[in-house]
Length: 167
Image: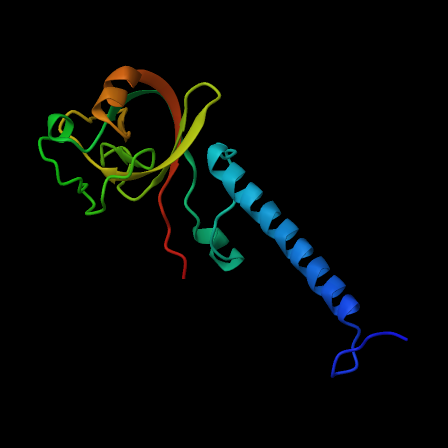
């Protein structure tokens, strides 16, 4: 004779169902997290899909390409910025490896910027400006002053697009 609970269900079957449901849910979550972790590291193709709805396709911002851009590095310290509050020209806090300073005449503030260091790609956001950042020059925020000095000056190819609000 089988054991059943007060609802007439076999507890072993209920347990097997719950365990299989949790395993499937965990596998789906791992797939989503793996895809999310991989996506920001890839530079987009020249015809990147827009993040907003298909109805906005005709209004999407084109992907601009700049070659031979000078990339320097800074952190939010008083030595690099002349102030130590860490607030960028856009009003956002400087976020290492996310914030970059640009010449707004070349790349508008708020734009998504992809730096390609010859195979290594970094996605960042144009949130800051700098007195020495003019023309084809980007200043990338990093975690420390020592790291900024260590990384020095590099040349990179840059892809960028203006951020379009999703409505």
